[in-house]
Amino acid sequence: MFLSLQMTRTIHFGTFVILSMAGTLVFGNQMESCSTWYSDNDTLNNLDASVSLWERNNQTINDCVIRCDRAPSCRSFFHHPTNETCLASSSYKRGLPTDKAGQQGWVYYTKKQYCDNGYTFNQSLDLCYKFYRANQTFNNAMMLCEADGAKLAIIKDEATFRLMNQVTSGAVTFIGLRAMGVNREWTWWNGQLASYMAWNFNQPDNWNGLENCVIFYTQYADVYCTSLGYFICQKFV
Image (cartoon, rainbow, N blue to C red; front, top):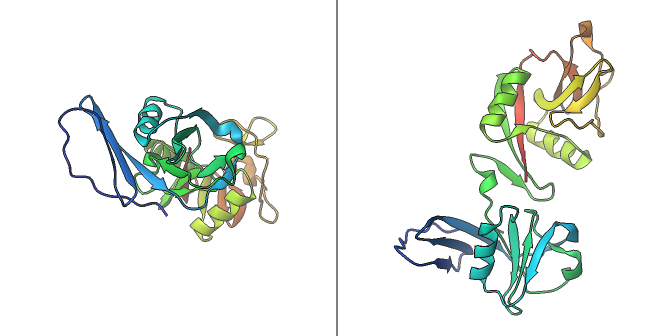
């Protein structure tokens, strides 16, 4: 479980790091704004070592925070208070690299700033999402997501499909999938061809030859892009 604490203390000079008993780490100095780190020492899952950025020994928590704050690709870190080892990660997932799996005593820290503004973090899928119950066209939905720093949802696999089903509860909802080109290849907004599809019965049918967008209501259906539907925005982390 993540624990947090509202900090009210004002620091006028020098570098400071505060680790509360509630599990919140706050770092800052006189030259930069304060950053908050959330700790979690629940059971850590295995994680592919490819997301590991660097490992440093003889590191206090302060050292880990400073290094990670200065590295744009650092999204979380693990600290071992006994060994004083810091592991930086390019992922927000709460899992140790493969070679550290099973070791006891590691504590995980993350900023979690990417899930602000009402977005919900799904740890297993490493993404944030927000469901908007407001009827919009495909283009308007995309613009509203982008205003959040997000995009219309990509359903890349069955796990994401199950999550979206749970979140939308069968409501007619736009996702970020469109038919592109003469061959109507189903393509996500990032240019990737869809590899996981969940079409409803007799779908897609391309009614009148103009159904180039996709709505999601437990399964997919192609619709006019000017149709109205709810939408779900997604931030990949």
